[in-house]
Length: 287
Image (cartoon, rainbow, N blue to C red; front, side, top):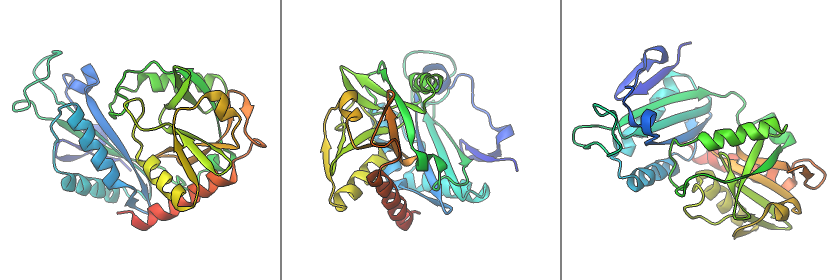
């Protein structure tokens, strides 16, 4: 079945979708994005993604292409048209396509934002076999720009990090700056010691994860202690468990860091329980 996508007000077969070569995202990486998971045909944490999108747009002084209510309807329509039971909806907003390339922002009165959405069908997303065995990560230097809290389409270095991990026979990379872990290439990073979860505090240094916020809330409700602070790779290697969170992986156990196995090298009970709680609670409020 040909996938239907959304481009600037139109629902089109993906083979007919087009964006100008002068679009700012193509020329300048001048765009932001969000990815919302779909479980049981419903959107997970949509409100959180919508609020973060608004924040990203505000930080870049980029006009919103439509209201969040309209955006919700577009999400729902694409999920329905493409018959997505489990998967994701990718959304991208750019500063638009002016008449020519220029470093200066175009006038928003004459250059309207570009809005693109498409779905990804991912059967078995919630019951991922990877979660049952956990992932292995390596550490790499974090050389990204200083506003990682804005969810921009500048994803070249995270892509390079994924490839570094793949070449090392691992699944992902944790980025390190000034001796401390910032985050994974496309996720937030955590370790567990005893009954305490440790993760880096929110700042411009990391993305303010929507799944992160929900998981930490559920952890506190489950009587786990949460400590938001800087931590090192060595400290994480000495932990009982570790995990990552993101919209597409939910809670994913980490079983090895830079060649050092955590515990017995299998997913920890607390991380697996947090994954279970997150999926159960998120399904209850999905829209």
